[in-house]
Length: 140
Image (cartoon, rainbow, N blue to C red; front, side, top):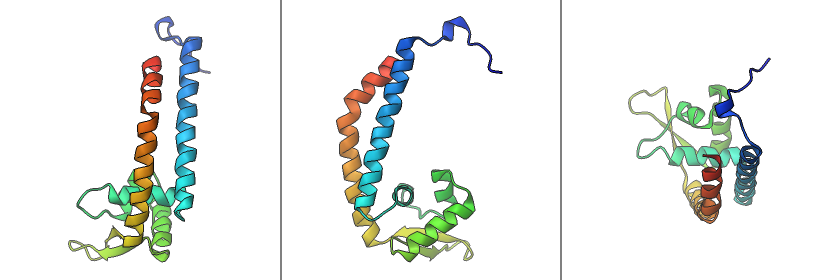
């Protein structure tokens, strides 16, 4: 059975309203993101994987890196990466330090799609920023 919260941390009606508004805004952004991914011929999870691969910096990531970034079990990440390879979004490159381990690299097709998706997402976040800042201040 849950324990009661101490009085000093009790939530008010305004707290619940602010949290509900914040969750709603997150869901709206999520729906926006899913729709943009589908327009590019990707599933939302594939889009997230491409972004995780691109977002690792100069080092090419491994399947394990993708699994950690997407909070997936390794076998699920392996399947996701396999589908991305089969569809021409990424390439597996043998690691120079361990020939049994593969590094992942975006193809030109993926770089183009991800650039369009990322620009759209950045613009949407910029549009939402004042609203999100106000929501966070109300929660804070």
